[in-house]
Length: 115
Image (cartoon, rainbow, N blue to C red):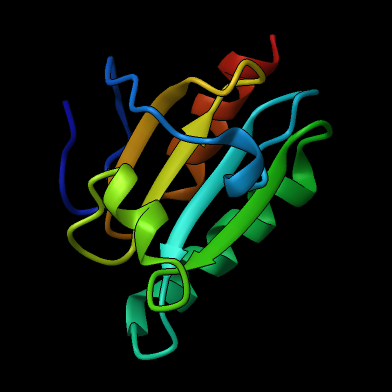
């Protein structure tokens, strides 16, 4: 299940992705967000993600330019920007958001994975 407008939603999807290609951490959760230079709201996601990741130890972050890596976007069914994912340490997709997630929602989802 996914929702629009920046609401983080738990997912049960288990897409076949190469964790090393996405830069996922094996030590803790990883926030992956897809962006593009021409995407205005993507800058908002970048600020929120960087702020929350700086506050929480053990959380990795990677940004993927959809124009530079369309294969990763296809593998995760990214159809609009910005799209943000949270993967756990095992590389399973746990949350997905389209739009700009709130810092509180992002922090809550990551804190649950760090516990």
